[in-house]
Amino acid sequence: MLRYPDTYYSRTLAEHGERPALNGRLSVDCAVVGGGFAGLFTALGLARGGMRVAVLEAEAVGFGASGRNGGFVSDGFAAGDASIRRRVGAEHAAALQDLSAEGVEIMRGLVESGRIPGAAKVDGLLRLRRFDRGADLAAQAGPDLAYLDREAIEKRLVSSRYRHGLEERLAFHVHPLNVLRGLAAEVERAGGVIHEASRVTGCDLSGTVKQLTTEGGRVEAREVVIATGGYTEGLVPALRRAMLPIATYVMASEPAPELLASAIRTPMGIGDDRRAGDYYRLVEGGARLLWGGRITTRAADVPGIVRQLRAEMTGAYPQLQGLKTEVAWSGLMSYARHRMPMVGRLGPGLWHCYGFGGHGLNTTAIGGTVLAEAMLGRSDRLALFAPFGLDWAGGPLGLAAAQGTYWALQVQDWWRERG
Image (cartoon, rainbow, N blue to C red; front, side):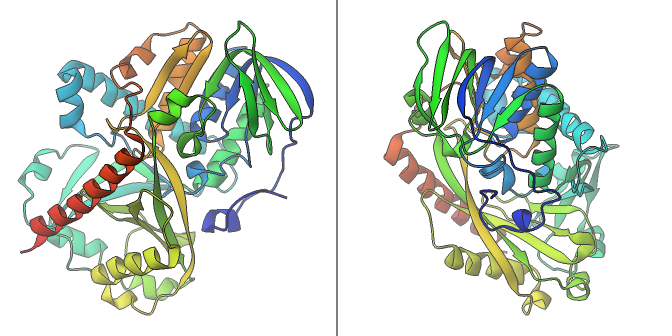
């Protein structure tokens, strides 16, 4: 039986195939630990490059944040352009931005390949502002990025909340769990092997040939990639110390196409530019609304968070007061202190690819791609991520600081929007 939490995505799977647990001894060139987007894109690149690859997933592919997120694909990084430029300089920052845009196109190519059942791709993303300053947004406008004033926004959204915005025409949104399961099938078509229900319980990563042990078997490999995201545990302590597991929340409404059409008149994804923002989108051709937001640094009461999400929803759209929430869920994302992906080499034959919280799905695609290129000796683009290393995240104090920062950002948002 597939091992997924109850979410809108797990309820609407396009296919229900299961993959066997590891049983016995397996020898491969590379073992990838973690069956999310980052691990699978890495495995795909390696398998297409001729490596014998095995993916070990503790539950089912896409069990973690990869199968529970908002489903948005757009360029950029959570750290923001200004922060990245301060750390690495303008030229390096521009190269990273180009990588993120390439990640969008990698994901686009996957979902438009015709081999991903239930991808549910919808083009476009609105990034909206809730306070009255828009000159900087207007200055960013170009062929693929349109500035929206309040009148243009209100043609799309029947809400008085938003004042300015940008329409990202190259961005899109998808059903992430169906896309990920389709990606897993691509890995298998390329010759890779995936074992579900195969949690790694022990390891010896010191030798030329590394060993990973599960309840049912053992994998021997020259190379190992750790891509476990927010569910990174103690397999490699340095990776756990560099990561903050941050919970985020999503709710899905009952079917109510006519009611939703009274409020939201665009199929595009929507997100505000608050420092502590909300993101939402219509699915099933406008029949349901998925609304996400809030973060906590420890598991929170989901019904309580849903009340907060509903308050945000009805604050923007009072006409949706009667819209019922049908299912809600949370998931753990991995964040670094520098808020950039952590992709690199930890030691001889040992690699990592995680820290994708807050970026959108494009960064998992490009992160796994450049890691595979480096492992195959085909490019040195992995070096672009080198300045964003395994900084200690602060442990429990880091989690407390992250929660405090989030609350402070909420206050800053309120202050900007108070007028």
